[in-house]
View 1 (tube, one colour):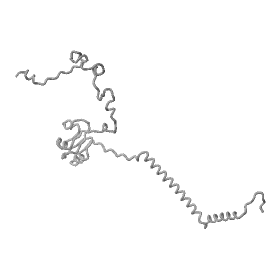
View 2 (tube, rainbow, N blue to C red):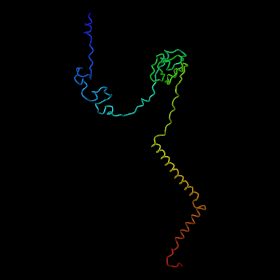
View 3 (cartoon, rainbow, N blue to C red):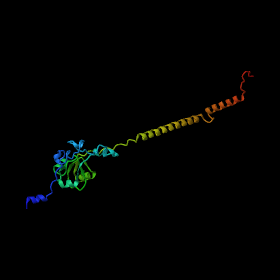
View 4 (cartoon, one colour):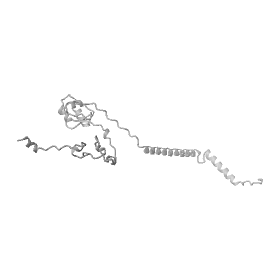
Length: 229
């Protein structure tokens, strides 16, 4: 076997196109760069989403919706079955130990324990978060979960929007107005009841006033320019 026979059958590496090296490159005067423009200069590279000078596709597409994914809290996860297989009873488990033993790769810097699998060993687990099922399984065998943040307090309802609050205030004002009117009516009824139906003093005074009015009606009215007899 000759080396020439081996090399003749091997795939040859294609020659690199040497841009900007003049006519000696075999690509002509401009050497595959074209004439003028930013692309013909040294150091040029096409930027991301470049669209020939026009408005890029990203700017043309409509933007809708909202996402909090940038602000979400992410964890490095470990399951109970992994802790069962990797630790002995009485051991303390935390993120540093898991990374040191190459059980986890440190990505987010926070540890969360999940409940896949079973655990029969008494461990002390130091974590930033744990699922309710994982906590229950660890504590059932006498283990401990440390370093967990207390649960967040639930916010009290704010009482609705500004429009709803305004409507509620208007209803209260109407009810107060109606109550004031009803109180006035009751006061009038009480005053009439105190006056009586003609049996007491109030009734006698009212009857006397009525009699005087009827007597005045019977008298002739005085005429101007005349002397009354």
